[in-house]
Length: 237
Ligand SMILES: O=C(CO)[C@H](O)[C@H](O)COP(=O)(O)O
Image 1: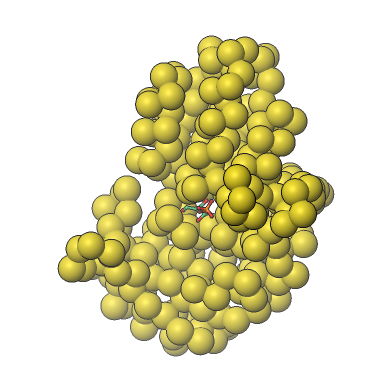
Image 2: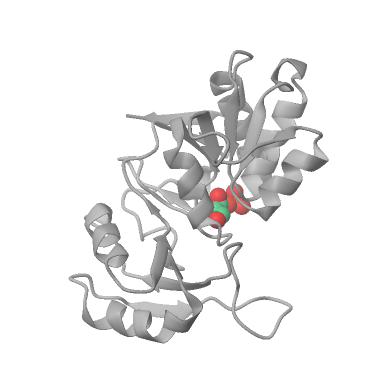
């Protein structure tokens, strides 16, 4: 593989699977996005991981599980997950993350919260000193459709954080907004460098109409980054 970004995703994903998923596990959460494709690829290379039940975080990861011939589960069936491995859009030095580039933030958070261990896999571009400096498309805010205008107004007027830009995420190849797996819309709001992402998360979740926010604070215990030079760097608590 000659593309350092793809190689980085694969290196991180393979090492996380090797380090975290073991034959004595019963239930494993599968994140969403292009890096997670390599997580499932690695799992499928290991026959000793075939008996595990896999819980998806999106339509995409449900397909990865089913097409790989793995056993599909849900958080209704399994409230305790051994480990969840997921990608991220940006990860700071405290292991806080922005997620939701694929609009899957709600189910991703549900499955991450249900897990005893939450691990992030990403390529070198996702490493950051402060959230909001590398991923400048904004914090994904999933909202109930009828509230997107009122939430945008609340974001502009009710927070102690001042938004730089706020956009309703529009679909590609469709005239209209992105609709999440839960039937909601996504507003991407850029706040600049975030000194206190957990405070922003708390404030956003109080706004009427906000369903979930793509800020994952104090959740991950480790992040694997596939580097440009072919190594993997690890950030842990
Ligand atoms: O949060 C996500 C989807 O909602 C993804 O995990 C995140 O966007 C990273 O994706 P990729 O691995 O393709 O870079």
